[in-house]
Image (cartoon, rainbow, N blue to C red; front, side, top):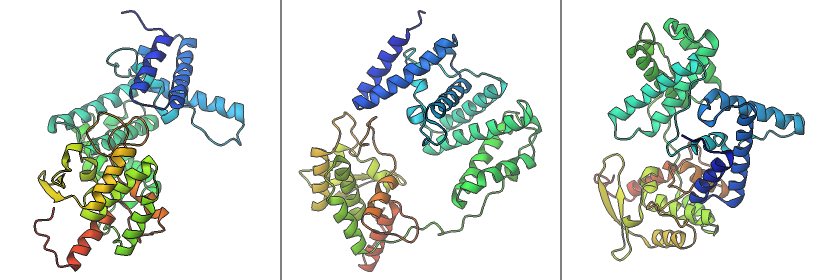
Length: 374
């Protein structure tokens, strides 16, 4: 098979970015970074198809060093590669289906195999891997790299309780108790997998000790009615595309007390404008509810659809405001800045669930029955 030239790869990368509606300046930046990476490979007589994860890390370190050399140690840190992933974007253009990264050493081979087997285990159990599996795969890469760098490529057979303790101690300082508990759960899953496939002599998962998480310790704060009104009023003044989107989302949160995932999964066909109703797909029960489309919600969503939503083929209502345009996955990054902008400071957690709890409290105060409320 004839290998593509650098210019062909850059042209293919540019076509991909244009198709994903990236801004022209962002496209120019990405193509420039990809061209630098390809030049780096060419100087070392390395084919794109032979790119490894270790080589990408080496290139990032090289570019960071060049940046410091040109701007001095006092210059503010600036990553030389946008989003840290786009050197591989040029490699991805080498064919219709990008080949997996090749292992540069025994450590990478074991790590890649372990991660691949962990991912396939999730794929066998579910039609598509849950979002949590992405975190497990990251933890697997992180732990195995840490272990191989400390004790060598073949150190898994001698893995012991002390190693597990040192890894948890290394992870602990920068994490909350809840996050550290999640790390412990992911590490247990990895250790069970490593023992199951014969990489470790014994199952070390029972020896992973994480912090205790008490019931109700993470219950979000409750917003009062005047605080909810202040957030909606402040968001309603922002007429930018992002502002229109956020205002519509906040109206849905405040009016119906929906879960974050239920709003992210809303589709254009879920709103019946003639019947003035909205269909909600409940993520936990997998049931559907039909709710009346309240006037403030309908107006906010309509404003967003007319003047804020990107013109793309996706059927989900709420879309990212920057390319690549795809549906929102989390609402905490929407809610927290809006709370802060309105001067509302909840005492506890401040994610999207504060509106759900506020709505539940309001219903209880009004003696509204909640047996059928999902």
